[in-house]
Image 1 (cartoon, rainbow, N blue to C red):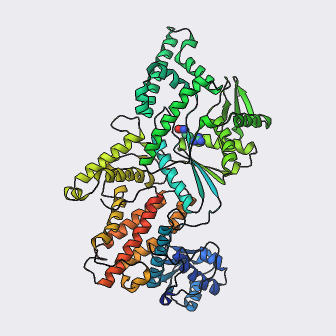
Image 2: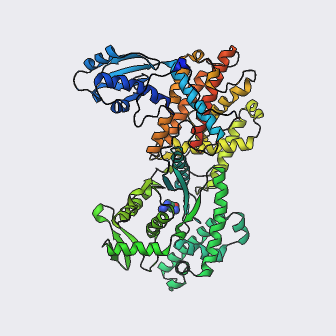
Image 3: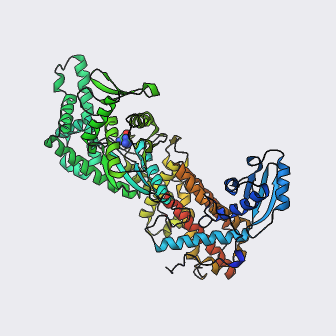
Length: 619
Ligand code: ARG
């Protein structure tokens, strides 16, 4: 790539007026902030209000105007009188060409040519800088450095070994990956941790089950499937036994599968090497398999941790602090934290037989992780069904007086209904991905002419297939439930994942299809005045809103904000193709338009990567 001068001069023709320095404004990296500042500067002077305050009140996307100020936010009394002062004194400049009054609003018109210039320039410079430094996450347009020095630890996906990977884990995986990326885009250091459900009585069950039904060969071939099968069979035995026990056909409770499983788990907790060796193998094989599947999703973890890794000492410590602080009560030999005062019920932290439970491990685990990572923030991405558990966890840590107690956040999400695969209603991540790939492949094949041109249909359908599943999951607000629909989410028609990939492909293909048009390296190689068209203005304006979309998605841990942004840019570009053509246009226009599309493609690709998608270039 060509060497980038990080501060090339602005073409004097598009020089901006002198702008005030305001906290929270980033005119260098976010061009629309420069234009908001230009408005704020004059309005603040005219009304004698602090410029910081006015800046925060210069809104985008309101009343069909480029920028709008709600008068009552700053001035009491008749809005038209306050408006009049601005209309009279406001001086149009290279940034802002016009001000009007509509009801309680002042509406400002941006100078489109200056705006287009600065937008294309900023994005292009950022893309070039990022290309020259591919490992940096904060050079792209829409990113910032403001999280520099802060560390976010995130617990997501976190499936249970032996039990199937359910829709809740799928959502956690998809949402957690995006939240991680968003933090990196804001300059945070992120540690991605997979907290495996790899401990508890069920591992005793699994061990008893494996001795009875296990196959070494199948275990190695597909550990997750096989362990699940074993788990289902031994659980069947267990419920058969319970029935017979209730009928009096079995009298010795100690001879049952359940009792045997409890003994094994107790042995595991006591550190019995024989019991542990087998469990360790199950765990390691499962992790290997999980890694393969996550790779297909373009998702990785820095640490595979899990319930089994929580130290005994921290759990013991938590129990002791709870007791010493008078937070506990007892019930039939079990120890509980009493949170009824906070309307959070009572929760067991030590079972009657002395073994630990999910909550105990999360309590001890929090302390272990604090000591290892010293996080500024720790997010857990877990289905809303566990909200009470996390409220109990965080409250208990707070009552224990842990110094790190305020740093936790439970990012929850709604349920998925109707998720089943050909294999049945029990969902394995691998099956979903396979089915998405096949369905996508069928969809692609239905257009024979196009299909013939796809170079690598296998890979392409796998990428678009996982895009379809992810976008379906990320489209709505995360707290909402949704109905899983493989047919629908893989459709090329409508606001589904394939449409976003298709738009990116189309943006890539302009350059390929017009090899005769010289590719501009910088905005100073094009004539910006040739881009004066409402369709272009709409695209530029939406590109200008991208940094805000990223910030909002980050602030509210809400990936849907980015998805909505992607659909809108895809529609805007889709409706510009016919008017803003590169092919057949006179050379200078063709160059300017090509530059617009390349720049738009860069931002769309960044947005897609934030969503953990792999932007494809051909389909
Ligand atoms: N393995 C748990 C489950 O499947 C989720 C774990 C979430 N993380 C945590 N720290 N509790 O329900």
